[in-house]
Image (cartoon, rainbow, N blue to C red; front, side):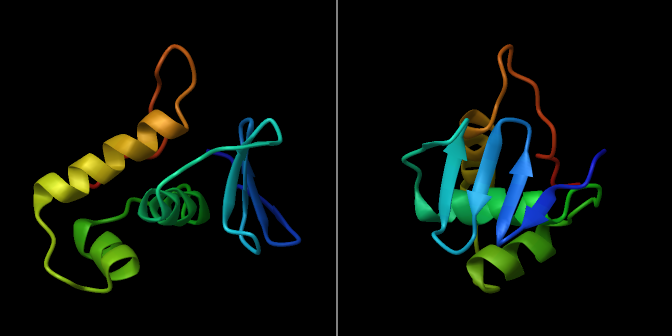
Length: 97
């Protein structure tokens, strides 16, 4: 898997860019309206492409170690997948191993 492009606080993957300084997700340059926690997850996954992330790492990074149900995590990851999916739907980094 290719590493994300990073320059000037921008992470790029496929047609998407995450502007870390503006905390904004764009598709082909167009801003996407997105829930902040979903963007947190997308950015975390993009920054760790090529790694298998376990549940505890994700909880620590996104929820600050708070107790979070498996259903809540699954819902947020599903939201991520829907936001950055390509047509037809294909997952690229949504496994919680």
